[in-house]
Image (cartoon, rainbow, N blue to C red; front, top):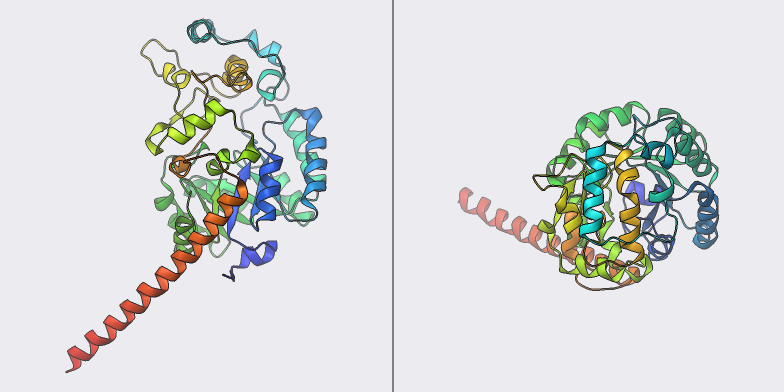
Length: 377
């Protein structure tokens, strides 16, 4: 099937499939299969970002791709983990320590973004400069809008893409000059809003006034991608699905939790980052909803409080508490697989959906003709 979709043609990709991942291997595999990968930089240590971008550009071999930044507002200008630990409220510190003992959480042996970094304006400035200096085709913002970043990205010939969860956010993004909106519904994994994808998409299309819109949230099949295209979107945005691919290097305990999980096994919580974030349910996350639990701290303090635990559960493949950001599209994960196999399945389903739609439309047209003839008679 050839897709005569403006955004697809503009980006030079084959299929209306946009894939978000924190894994370079996943991003490269999506690009090789004809989709548009978006690599998230929100978890990279500052000293590693340049090497990450250099590596992805070498491996992409001029294939189009995007870079995603997480730029929330109301963040300190500077700060270290040690500094902010001294400011953590006693109730949250004591509760977290009890959970560490209850779940026998081991101390991580390696550094990660979650143990060594605090989201700050200084960190964001460094991430922004590396991103703008790259050869990426699109700069994506998931949380937060920066008008200067949008302007500078467009000056460098990069598309400015923004994920939005409400009409209010869409209007703000458009006012700053964003080129492409991603209508990210309540169904989505990670930081998300309160409106479901099917309800949000037509509202975002209405305010976009012809600008390209993608649909995100709960999408795991080619039929769903075809459906949102039928509504007016120029592609589907998928993130959770790639967690099942070998290229993502997902810890086995997490993969098992995802394989056994259904859409209702995901939950929106502030316990991960301090902002509403949809994750796959785990005893660690559920503990923060117990009657005795204090409220999670606002971003970035919740990460300072529990970042070592998140790092530990992934390092040690801890089946008792491991979790990750995941959307209601987890229903599409049934086994370990590869990105190529996932892309092939999505593409085949797109073809099937188109054929089915053409068949049904033909039948409707035929029935309509017969009905009109009967009325005239």
